Image 1 (cartoon, helix red, strand yellow):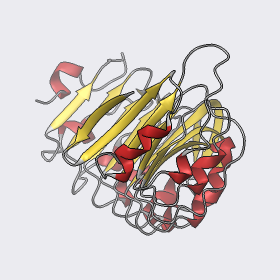
Image 2: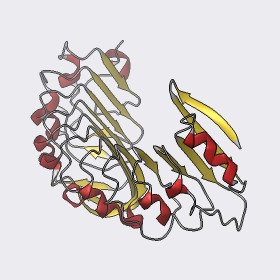
Image 3: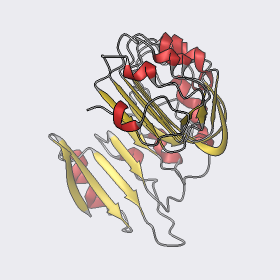
Image 4: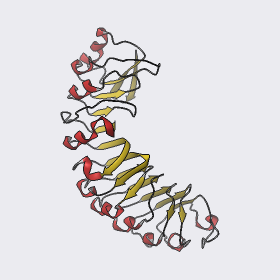
Length: 280
């Protein structure tokens, strides 16, 4: 057993390939500890989590490999942070965790029950296969969303209007549809598409507060014209396999508000070389 201070006032107990002992509960009862990281990487490990709901002052729970049943996490009603990990199996009804602010969970675990979490501020959805943002429900407090799709995953951004306070959106892999629906999350400040395929950045023109945009391994993008004279965009990164079909980089060169431009690769049909475009 190891106690680790994560940040001022927050201490986490870390149990890695070690059995829970009843005397460990005293750390939680005394208020010295409010977080638990538990799991085991050894093949065939079967870590028991049944003790967790009885721990007083348990606010943070992170599950590693080898958990026999993640179900008891749903009974830890005081949790404000829960990380179920990408390899968990089974179904967990999270709807009773009304104080939960941060959640990381595989879609197959039962992420649909996250729609009932009114305090949620940060959500990471792992292993997304298909569906829409609307499937996550309405979250008036959510300001950070990360979705990791399967390689052949399909994600529709329909339902973005249900996330009115969303500031940061990170999408990994898969193909993104209905990007125009992002206008419903008008307070977005940062979007990162990392392997998430889209052919248009027209959505950016409808986001008046967007400051940072990353297009990495997105495949061919039709044009950067929608970014012309964007009122708030200050940072843009184009990397990996992302190629601009029309080759016109004037929208970048002519925008004085862009303080940072990272253009990783050139192409014969581009109007400017990366050296002329990059800032600073």
